[in-house]
Image (cartoon, rainbow, N blue to C red; front, side):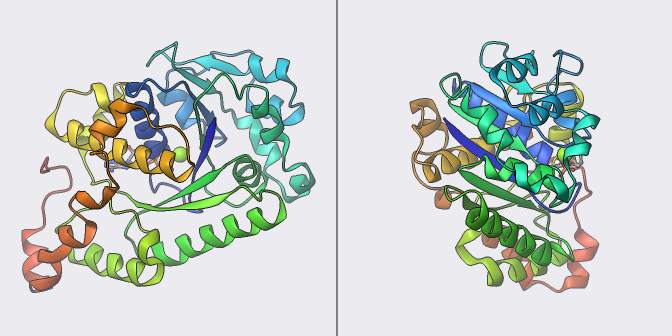
Length: 305
Ligand SMILES: Nc1ncnc2c1ncn2[C@@H]1O[C@H](COP(=O)(O)OP(=O)(O)O)[C@@H](O)[C@H]1O
Ligand SMILES: [Mg+2]
């Protein structure tokens, strides 16, 4: 069982979207997958179609991490009831977010150990802060993926996330390692984003995943329809699905987990360096006059791959 945390200390950057994309990649690779919705907002639970689908939620699991309570808080997702289960989120989990709970940091890890033979992969969608919930989540993880957008504060937010991962590794989770930074909502023709990308790259170098997630309305359409992106019928969705395959491939490899042959095939069977890199995507933006770029900016939701 490999446990991957999806985190950032900022809201709205795409943690839930990335969690859903990776869950989609996982079930299309036939991996038995559990998604843990640690965010009290419950977006992941809603998106995976399991709102109200279990007697308990992650809040009760953090009160009492017994096998019985854990199993009563897990629901089957209609995306694939056999392969995809959800440890459902709820607003109640917010009471576990305070700093006073830091002495109970390993409760989620304790609970998840009860089902370690039931799943190949566990994805933990963390809340956008460094409170008790994110600490609980990261303590249970083998690896943590930091999600960011290319904005004004992305470097400082990513730096804080890495610092947090390092703190948690030294205090409560020696197995935890940072997987890297996944850049989301990329608009390759934005000169502002190109500049922010340079900044991020100079700070984090190889920790920035080569595979990035572009801004695509297909992602929102699939989410709105309650569909895995791998089942959404459009060219943009196929491109997104392939990108999530690559990120999942790299995640499994970084956790030394078995990689299903179908994923090896769809992810290119190598590391993600074979795909167009972020730097390449931005080359044009960096070499032309920013004002000219501003005028030719692609409308936000135009489907270009
Ligand atoms: N790559 C993307 N392309 C288009 N829309 C996106 C993309 N990533 C995220 N979004 C949208 O942005 C909003 C916030 O994303 P979400 O995944 O909920 O962020 P978080 O979980 O970090 O708060 C959602 O409406 C989501 O559909
Ligand atoms: Mg979210």
